[in-house]
Image 1 (tube, rainbow, N blue to C red):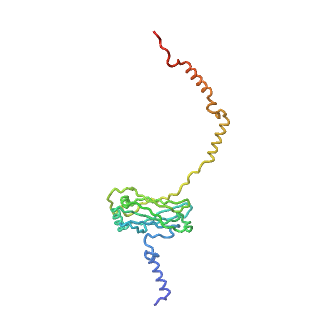
Image 2: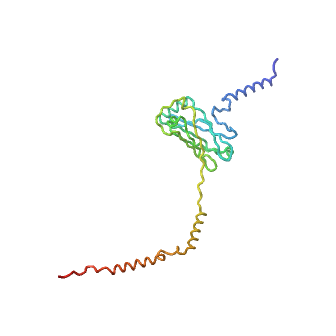
Image 3: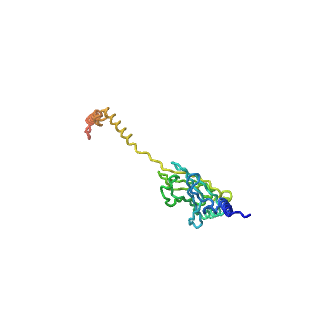
Length: 250
């Protein structure tokens, strides 16, 4: 018995829905590791990296910064593993002392403020690729914000940071990133303590007013010592014999 046409359409639609939810090529053009606009109830932006032998930057997704809603910036990091091709390329770039670059878009680090300002380009930082290899993909990424939480800078360092020519195994040490993420917000400098300074000046003025002796000059305080010293010098000079005295005659 032939089934009605609406039933067949419903079956086909169900099959297509299942296929699209299990395969990435039906995920609105996103690849594995691409950034979703809303995840974990917040907002996410891409963390991209580039390492090329010819030193021409070609950025691709390394992971995503997950911005959590709230008044204070709260960010977590989700990262992809390096593929075998990327591990080989990173070692080749390290061999020619090339650079490993990262970049993030300039956005607010607050999920509820993303509509206040349009994205204005990217912020980029880099380290030597050999340091990235020898650190076994261990790095520290710092996000620098202004007082409003807007991202104004990014920096990256490796642990350790020096290149010593240490041999690194591909499969074991260059697959998973070991990243420490930190947010560096500006610290308000202490304001001038003008009120405290004026209060101290008033206290010193009051003390001087209560002790008039402190207002006297040096000569007024020590006139008797100065006068005694002058008299002593006069007496000493008058007691000395005149220069060039007479000689005894035989």
